[in-house]
Length: 433
Image (cartoon, rainbow, N blue to C red):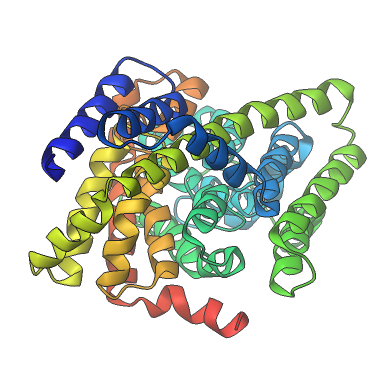
């Protein structure tokens, strides 16, 4: 049977099942079983048992629920509330004023949570009521939060990077380091855009009655210390070689519990809410990862990646044309799937093409994370849009329109790191040999 018929059958089945509202993870399992049953003589259930064990038994996979648990603790404690109070005096005199709290707080929280949805929800719960109460422009507030909230995937430690590293075999430590410079560039670009808009239209961020002295600013530093200490503990332990990502995640959980306890925002109820939240999110991600791993093996058995790689290679595309095609593909996927599904469904096909074109798999990991960030603000399945909708009850498509400048900024950063891959590769190659 031809490659076209096999690919079309599996793709059609995938779209049909996803459209019928079946869970993404279950859909991937069903399509994988169909591939084995219809087009090979291999026993799907025997292969499935091996895949389930191989996908979940690695020690690296332990970092995933631990980082999620740390984010859940911070989400439910006063640590996140103190971020707004601590950052406000430092940005009050910039064009855009407190809008920058959305961006800076998202970047800081991203550095300890690893989750885009957790970052957006936590920062949004704190900043949006304050900003809207002070008559800040709604489109600027919601748009900046939608874009900056996605930094939870790019600024390490990142759950998405963990999944990519596990599936691609790329060093997770190098991935974490590689995300720092692009993450800072992206956060700075969001802030620069907000400042430029407010320079031309100061009424977007009206000046309030707050006037802070340097003494006031210094007094707020203790409010920021818990987050800063957690960043140093988690990332510093990885970069210095003192701990693996899994061990660093455990250190981060202990640190988050300690700071939540001393801030008197941790009791039995909050603790169990964090535990249950972490369990639900971890199970959802693990189901998708296992299902996609099974589908990847089925696709490999059918020879689709090798034949597709050969076909695209024969088209004579340049490396930049290939990136353009993949970017369009990821935009389309982002309208239908969540970020984890995008990674595990596309990686078996995209990674061989990328390496054959001469791109570094480490660079591709950062590129893919940014494309997943784009998917967080593209309707109808943009997670950040749903989170913000739950906070302010604004129409999903209107929020997406507010986030359009962030969408453009992300693509400009993609173009920048594609033209200058050293932005991604220099730091990890210097720090980890």
